[in-house]
Image 1 (cartoon, rainbow, N blue to C red):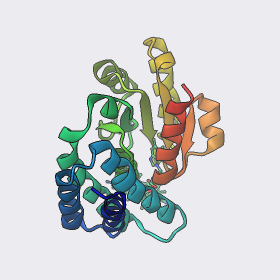
Image 2: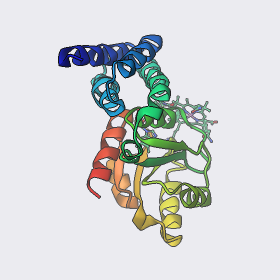
Image 3: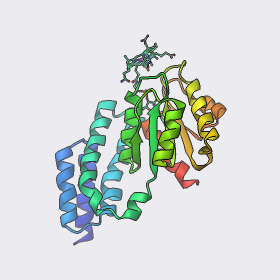
Image 4: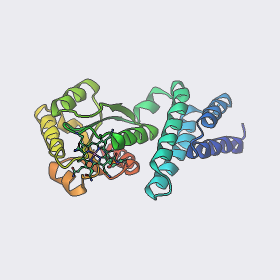
Length: 218
Ligand code: B12
């Protein structure tokens, strides 16, 4: 196949993903595979190239949450087709993220967006849900062995649970093998520093970027 032809189809795929065209992206993914383009190539230069633009536009205020969610769903649809064509090494390279909202807190809209964006960026994400006790985080870390734990809190009254969760992970002897991220509207970089987490995520786009940077720095 011509190199230009390959570039063309991957560019079309990225554009279709940015516009949230789920059926179009699925079809282009299938076409690309039929043309013999490697799974990793489709992921990096088609889908992830598109998601990068989505992340940038969201950050710049040019795209809004419902559109981002649609793009993330589009990405999921394509990933279902692509997964069998990715080698084990490709999948392992992304890292596993365990994410949840802390005890006493039921807000999950932001956490869900972060989970979707991270999945879109290629991470394996285990979403534990809401109202998670420090012990629930500890148990889940033991069960899933993630690279990163992400905590979300939307209430000033539940923010201290983030610190308690880190303490519980420390006591269980799990802290050193993990990177910990924290986010949610009332959470700040200063708070994250104070409780000894590794990174603060102000929004879903920067959460993915910081997760990548954390794993690259290990
Ligand atoms: C929707 C909402 C609800 C819904 C939640 C539905 C749901 N399924 O989530 C309902 C109605 C259930 C609710 C209930 C309550 N709420 Co409420 N709620 C909100 C509201 C309006 C929006 C929150 C939201 O979803 N924002 C949109 C998302 C996309 O933004 P986000 O969560 O900040 O997430 C982004 C970033 O923070 C970051 N991020 C988030 N999590 C994470 C995690 C990681 C790891 C990383 C890296 C990044 C990251 O990325 C996200 C995407 O960009 C806010 C007001 C506001 N404007 O924030 C109040 C608000 C948070 N609620 C508030 C309150 C007081 C309550 C209640 C106590 C009300 C009551 N008296 O019953 C209850 C508490 C229930 C409980 N135990 O949790 C207050 C909190 C005040 C405070 N200082 O603590 C707020 C600020 C409203 C206000 N001004 O008073 N609420």
